[in-house]
Amino acid sequence: MLRLPRVRFRVLAAAAGPLAAAAALIPAQGAAAASTATFWVAPAGASGQADTSCATAAYSTVQSAVTAAENSTSLSIPVVNICPGTYSEQVTILTSVVLTRAPVAAAQGPVIIQLPASVGADQSTGLSATNCQADDASAGVQVPQSVIEVCAADTGGLNTRGAVVTIRDVTVQGNWPSTVCYDSLYGILVEGGATLRLTGSTVEQAGAYPLNGCQGGVGVEAGFSPTGQIGHAILSNDKITQYQKNGITVDGAGSSATISDVSVTGDGPTSQIAQNGIQFSWGATGSVTHSVVSGNNYTGTGDASSTGILAFGGGGSACGIGAGAPLVTDATFSHNKLTDNDIGVALYNLDSTCTTSASTPTHVTACYNTASNSHGYPGGTPSADANISGFGSGVGYQAGVTDVGNHDVICYNAISGAGYAPLDPTSSLPSPPPPAFVRPVDLVTGPAIDPDAYGNTYDGKAYHPGTTQAGQAGGALARRPAAARHPVVVRPRP
Image (tube, rainbow, N blue to C red; front, side):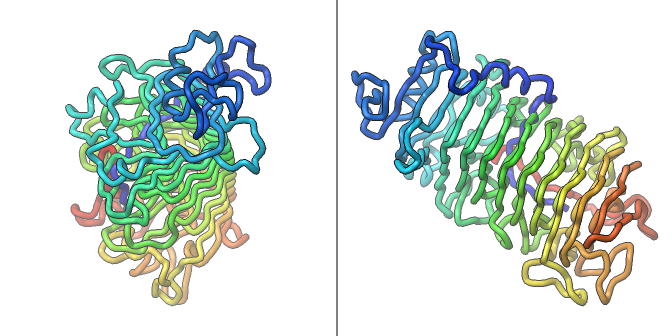
């Protein structure tokens, strides 16, 4: 049903675990001890200067300052002050450090860390060489190329704990040209058990842009399930845009993310690729709250739909990462605004055959979200921006909330717009005939097992989704031909 690019996924640990520990490790702003080491970066920085301000910066590249910070003996987490300017470089961070825009007037301009043009044009250069890639070759995945990579892994790729990297008020630009086709491209990549705290920052142009049909390009990725790499992320007041495949991906058992007040914007109607705003996959967990996710809208062929927020787990070897592919459990998606996505919130936890909902309770919550979609099927004919292939065989698929899961909660979601209309002049419930399968809340595709759905509305009126689909025993996935049963096509590590 959903077609995903090769995307690395990591899961943030439960809120009381690594995230809480990360918060404790970060010094309060304005209260840094005198022993805290500070390093200044400016385009005109030069070795030997006093290194106490932008005018006296001792470093002209972010990487050189980061390396110096990592080698310092400061008892507190060292701080790298980056002065306004554009820095064309890739940055690798191995230990705890704070990267922040220098405390200068806003009028002096932004801080931009940008992929070097030569690296973007040639994917054989600029590849990661950290411990986090120790198992890439044996897993048969492509070595990643990132603008910023955070890797806290020990020798042999062993995940560690305790490394916290804070990035504040910085713009990260991928700038990969539209001719690029490589599956492992990232704006920011977090692995090795590290935690990223990203605040007030922008990540844009991750992967080929303008878009092509290749399945690489993620704005921010935490963790990577095929190689067991763990990542954690705490994102707040950030902007993620112009990504090739996914805006944010949290992937793999042990990985986690807390995402709040973040804007994730897809490219809008496109036939090039089925984008996803935020994805949690294969054991990852966490929350998305008070965020705006929009413009993930696929208009092409190939049995694919785009999603605003996606949870995907299980699937075994059929559409997962192999036997025992873990589920996404106990994640929470609430109080978000979801606009013009094919599917607002998509919960997909499948059995090992990828044909029906997992038998294990998943307890994912999607509540108090607002989902609207103006791209519909008036009179049974899709509008120019409507999905036309998500349900396979030329049948589009759109829904405010979709649940293929077990004991999930879908409550008090306000759904509206022609794109999620439950009824049009040529259709009848429970589902319209081709060219579209459309519902405000879809509990029948899996079908969902014992969902708890209540308080949901469509266009301001109470909407009570059915849980069975007459004449389609075993659910909508089961009735589809074997070649079309994969609700998501996932390739490892874009």
